[in-house]
Image 1 (cartoon, one colour):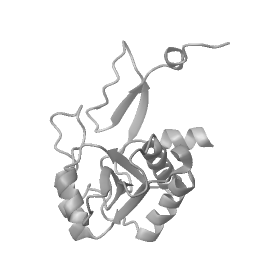
Image 2 (cartoon, rainbow, N blue to C red):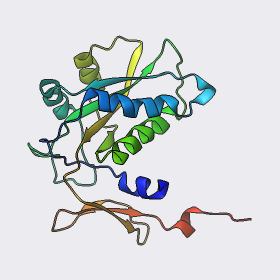
Image 3 (spheres, rainbow, N blue to C red):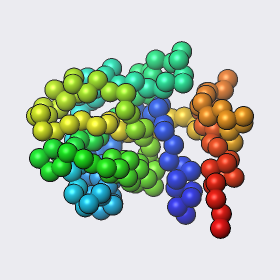
Image 4 (cartoon, helix red, strand yellow):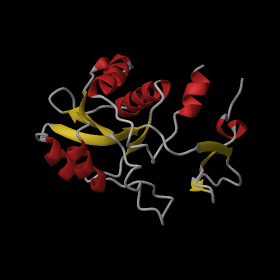
Length: 190
């Protein structure tokens, strides 16, 4: 069950814009992040949910989409995210968030995958402009954006060959994600 869910949880970059996601649905996924592990149990992460189309349109150009796909400028109109979650560190609570961001984003995306949606963690963000758009003060640091929607692309996992881990798209638009073999990543077995 968990392996199937993790395998379904890919970094989707093309979505069906006709299928909307409510802020209540996203709040349910954020609750999974809230319940997840937190370094020192400090829980310094906060979240801003963006579902209004006008605000989504303003966030979209402030994001980088796929570094390995150098000829691709990102999703076309009709394939763009219908929602975003801004992952924010509250410096009033803690200055170090340890690995909470990765745990939280994985929890949110697993919840989305379980409900038939998908997303992409985006670190290539014009953080100053997005923070201004969201009205964040100096104690709230934007860490990442999670783009969300109903996936409109096929993403498959391939075995990496010769150490090549760069994702790519084939002539049919299928997105291939090479993963290192298990015997390469497990370096010790007692």
